[in-house]
Length: 348
Ligand SMILES: NC(=O)c1ccc[n+]([C@@H]2O[C@H](COP(=O)([O-])OP(=O)(O)OC[C@H]3O[C@@H](n4cnc5c(N)ncnc54)[C@H](O)[C@@H]3O)[C@@H](O)[C@H]2O)c1
Image 1 (cartoon, rainbow, N blue to C red):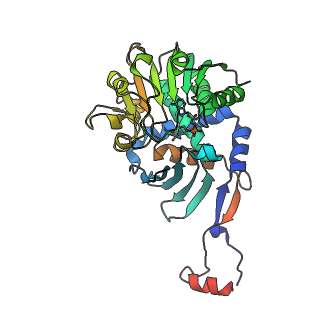
Image 2 (image 1 turned 135 degrees about the horizontal axis):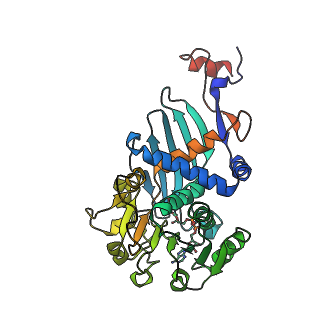
Image 3 (image 1 turned 90 degrees about the vertical axis):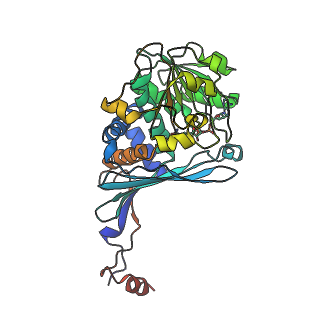
């Protein structure tokens, strides 16, 4: 009997190299726009999904999380970490990979890198939400925290919300220089600043994407004028927030999945009963998004499993036999399904 893996044993694997080729083959702006459409489609069928707050394992240095969900036909999960001190040792703050499986038989159908994909899906989600909440005709976004996520955010808001200008600030000027350099030729006008107060001046959208495993105050109340949309990306763990509480009290707050955001998001600073609007309801028209020009809107982003599910679903749609992936011998597939032991012994 052959010990070669059968077709059933094989699972398509999208490596980092494949992911980069898919993004370049599609074009970054098109990729972000198409990905946002997949996320929007899944938010609109929110009620179908199995939903649970992600399962977090905290340590002194960071967190490792599992993010599962299912739409009844396909199951997905992501493994992701967050270690704010990693960059000092030449490691990334966030790395990730994920999997889709067929609910009818439990067999995995896709395994993929998700470090790059997480940055893309986070930015696509932010910009999709920005389309519902940012002031009409927004042209300018401030980005506080110019690390790994920052350029993705800039490109997504250009592609999806039509912003033309970004104003950058990071506590580390080298990060701002890197971000500005990477955005050269993007079609965005880029300005850099030495204080967050200067960076947010005149911006209709303010994105915070800093990393610090502690309560931080990246934005204070006096920095936020009326009518602004805040896209708060970096506060995404218990004990890790970016905004002064007073800003939250003046804002209309929009969240992904309240049971997770109440533990991980900016709203961990508020009373557990404080009113928030679920984004899926805004996207289905069941709840209002931005109502008027003076309102401060806040997307308290923490990242939810359905966004990763959408991202994997989108990547799966990009795979053609033999391209953009390799087949991994990942599932033991004995000729007689009950003879797993025999299969192992015959290989000796
Ligand atoms: N909401 C989500 O869906 C989601 C998804 C991915 C990552 N995140 C979070 O977004 C944040 C950014 O991720 P990243 O991969 O870009 O991290 P990163 O470490 O690459 O970049 C973070 C940047 O923030 C800067 N910074 C730290 N404190 C600052 C301060 N007080 N003022 C200004 N800048 C400051 C750092 O110098 C660094 O350049 C992290 O907290 C991460 O956990 C959220």
